[in-house]
Amino acid sequence: MPPTLHLGSAWSSSWSIVGWMACRLGGLPVTENRIFLSRPDSPPKLKAVSPSGRVPALHVDGMVLWDSLAIAEWLWERDPGCAIWPKDPARRAYARCVAAEVHSHFDDVRNGLPMNLIKRWPIRDGLPSNVKLMARPGVRAGTERMEAMWRDARARHGGPYIAGEEFCFADAAFAPMCSRYVTYGIELAPDSMDFIASAMDSPLMREWRARAEREADEVGRDIVMASP
Image (cartoon, rainbow, N blue to C red; front, side):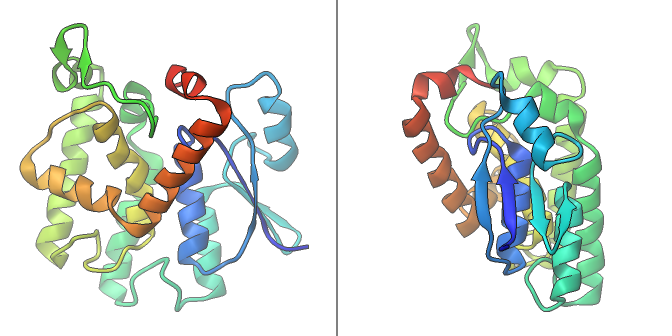
């Protein structure tokens, strides 16, 4: 049986982006199975393919890998020459630190700024989003930490990505985080906005955004616009 990658809704499932990018970076062809989230039948469908009841979940070689970072590391062990991590050992170690921090932190940003690749909220209640939304608990602190990481990465490696010119799994981990500032029209410092623009314009993110647009047309934009 070919490897199967179970994914959530393209416009709102942020971890699905990361797992999908990992498979692309790892050079693993997969059959994709989409499970729309936040529907009455979603929990049993998710539990049937993932022990955690969450996606992404990769079924491969008789195994189930139900975490995006675990998927990335398995792919790199399978082929250390793939694009998951930089080839330079120092840059690889740095990228791993960045990816691990994004993977395990920033829940306040995720919860305060729910991902939606289709919807736009430039103004809320007469106030610019960066005034109202950045005041939510933990959002500003998390954002400032991410900005510090982006600046440090570019100071070390020149950009446009975390480890330099090549997009790696650390950038995949950041991609859905960057999208939130576009969705909510939040203006950060110019260098941060440049990093966000590079992430959003990366080939894999452009491909995923096109998928989100197609899904929005398929299920109805009124549904997509009403979701987080």
